[in-house]
Image (cartoon, rainbow, N blue to C red; front, top):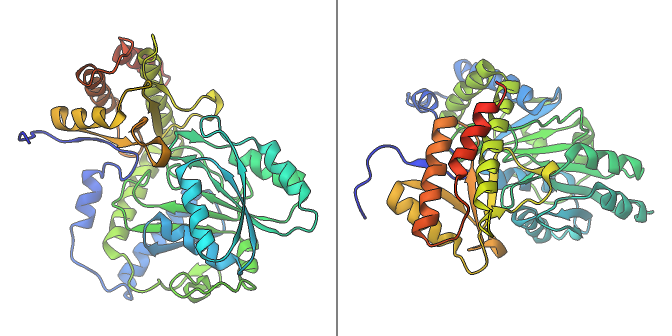
Length: 394
């Protein structure tokens, strides 16, 4: 391997770039997490997290990846044999389904084309058919990182309500939280699952669960085994009074700084920046797609993601070869296709600590990489991205 100079252009859809400010905030001695100084830091973070989740209810923090928050939601709300409804949207909806299956839950899926996203009317129809209200919960991924499709969480909530169904509404926000709009309370989400390593600009290893009062009440009758994830052991009223085991002290130091950075930019400013970068990436891919070149995997323009763009290569091309070229020649790291999309899709992450020059540099490398990998594509993708950024309203 050649020696690489300069910084890697890390364009994976998670983990994402960690700002120097966050790294410096974490570079300090440990604190006893039972001391007042640490408790004050965490209380500040808890307030900031509620602003990001847009909730006045409960937010819990764990030392775990986002998969841990998935598990927390399932074990605190369900009992063996419960039925859960899962709109099938991609690799991560399938993974959450697999986890629920291991706990003895009965899974019903509503299949959807991975490229076009969830139709809330189909969810409503399935819930209306459940006259006995056997379905305990609906498990929905907000932003399907494997496909670059952002699903209509608010409209799905309206579909649940229109069906007159009492199912709990569980939403994975791991790759949307802090990148584009999510409104836990306004959208009637009962449990919101989040992770540290995406829009919050932190290393992996910490996850979050937003818990509604309805979900908290429902958890009292759930009978799945729970120990590490047990909300009852962590809460004092609606306040997190203790952690499951040792608190992730240094990650919380970093969280304190990342929340300051979000507050300085404002959430609306963060969302606008992600929208600019997402639109520029899609403009670039649209140019590449001319003449049968790589194209957006998401075919629904109303549901395109502003945190990750999945790009499908032409038949016979190898997306993984392109990723190798970009990594070895230009020190640019791209996400690969997951499960059945392996080799068919590459993914450009544009979330977290990222700006216009960083994006343009990565897109330039990908355009060169398409040439070197022998993948046919339209020309002028980077120029299209530049035009998009210049025309964007700041």
